[in-house]
Image (cartoon, rainbow, N blue to C red; front, side):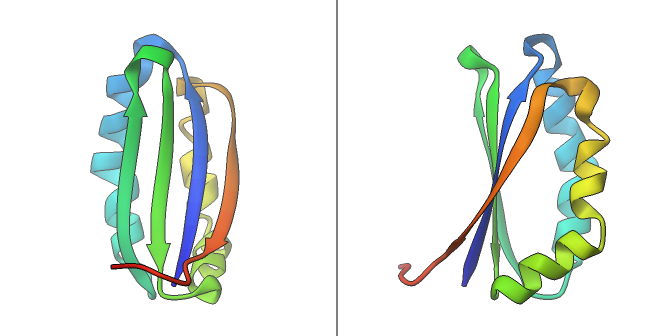
Length: 96
């Protein structure tokens, strides 16, 4: 399994709009991708930060999602961001 994390700094007044964007558009797009396992959106309203956490079957599936421009679709939310998102990837060797 492979985890893809995107760290996001938000405009404080845009947090709810950002959450709605993920709920209505990005999550359905992710769920339709081959190798998709699960998704979590973590919000820190006090500090206007979010973490997008997606689990994939393997690294190849995560990379394929990038090739399909999902990251570019997420970038469409830049007016909601206070800084560009930071993407990270991790192997998941253990889980319960």
